[in-house]
Amino acid sequence: MPVNSVSLVQTSSIDLEKAKGVLETLQVQVNAGLRYIKIACTEDGKLNSELLDNYQFASYELAFCVAEISAAHSFFEYANRADENAIEHSFSLIFAGEIFQSVLSRLKSISVDVQLDAADIFTLESTDNAKLLLTNCNGGTLAALGSKIAQDEIVRLPSILNAEKELVRETFYRFANDVVAPLAEEVHRQDQDIPEKIIRAAAELGCFGTCIPERFGGLQPDDDPDSLGMIVVTEELSRGSLGAAGSLITRPEIAARALLAGGTHAQKHKWLPSLANGEMLCAISITEPNTGSDVATVALKATPTGGGWILNGSKTWCTFAGRSELIVVLGRTNPDKSLGYKGLSLFLIEKPAFAGHSFSHQQNGGGALTGKAIATLGYRGMHSYDLFFEDYFVPAENLVGEEAGEGKGFYYTMAGFSGGRIQTAARATGLMQAAFEKAVNYANQRRVFDKALSEFQLTQIKLTRMLATITACRQFSYSVAEKMDEGGGQMEASLVKLFSCRAAEWITREAMQIHGGMGYAEESSVSRYFVDARVLSIFEGAEEVLALKVIARGLIESA
Image (cartoon, rainbow, N blue to C red; front, side):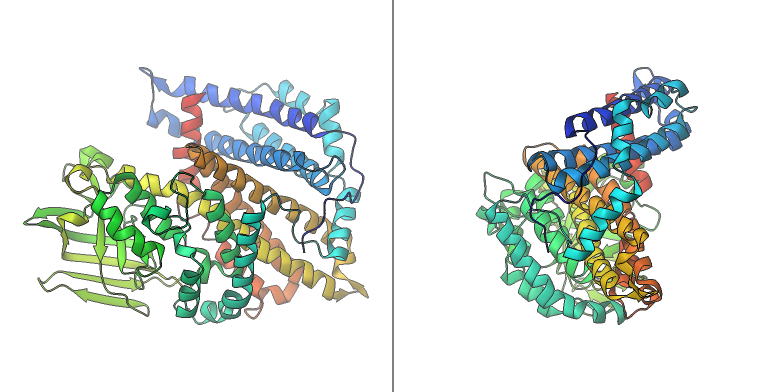
């Protein structure tokens, strides 16, 4: 249950503004590191990619520094909305203290690489405000909070959602509990398809239309984007099951954003209503056997022919390809590979829906599309497929943007993925929330040495740190959603994905550890959460590529 805004424990006398100032001193050092790399890697006024690769370790650490500091600032914004002595303040100060230590450690590890002054870094942790901030991270304070979490079964801090959004959250909270969760274990253990019961019930609730404007049959106001509503829904679906429900919105959102960015009037009116009402399910196919996050090297061959295009080649890791009737496929329409991403176009591939782990679709003209599901240790239900296109015909009207869209597929894809990244952050938060709820419940029930597990200091400290991190991820994603709806937030969407997905690995690990041997048993849902979490930092932009090629490069260019 969520807790009311009341004080739980007495934390240090440092206020939020002073704590914020402590983190800003860290940001100064982070900025200095970014500027050093920029100077070292700039030639003729441009960043040299080969030189930049010599600073991968420092760039990676700096990307995480910025993500962690940004998460802490989002927590401060959340806490500022509460009374001065509210629980939100206690948790925000604890989280800030932990982030301070993490960022400081990262800066120390790269200080030689980016020529940071060791004396300056030492000074950061010796200021009065830094010392005050760190006192909030002592074992006694953390354990006192953890004890209250266990006693009062506090699994979520107070919500800042308005009444409308809270109603949406509660609706999908019940849906996750009543429809998704009862089927989740069976889907995972038997590697089943997502049950039609879940898909149809989700469609009836308008789930697929949350990312599509009202004028096309969706739920988003035409003149008021609502990324927050989408991530609220995605979080609750993921709490029920990442594999069986958590990604239901993500694929139609990527497709919708791509169509809205580059589709013709006819394409938008043909495809978006069918996606919004769930009549047509979709998949996104970008990755190839030799092409992962480096989208510019996509090689699927698209050859012009009378009335359309012929596709030949392979794709991989196309999630939900079997059940989907529409696959958004990125292909190379210009054979000149030196053009990189400028030679790519986006296609809308129609096919029948297939159940099971493989399919084969033969066109009347002889073309074929076959798919085979890849066996995975988690994230089961949607299935991710290897796809093989053999002389597969696509009508000219199914090229996104038609003639004007040729060569612009990369841009349309990126328009979709910015939303996909914040959705993935929400999925991570939902998965963490599920794991935390199970951890609190088990810690209260399990007795060790004649005491409940939740009565031990180490367990209490774990619970406090877990709840602080989950809250930070949630508020960070809310903050980014607001920025995206205002037309920005592209960098922040990458930052929140980077931070939240790594956090999910730790949270689910701790939930499993609290369960002990039962956590390792398949019959325990925390074992599913643990293996599901591992995929989050791989898809929608692998962690390393996201940190180096998107976040760090963007930060260095702006330094």
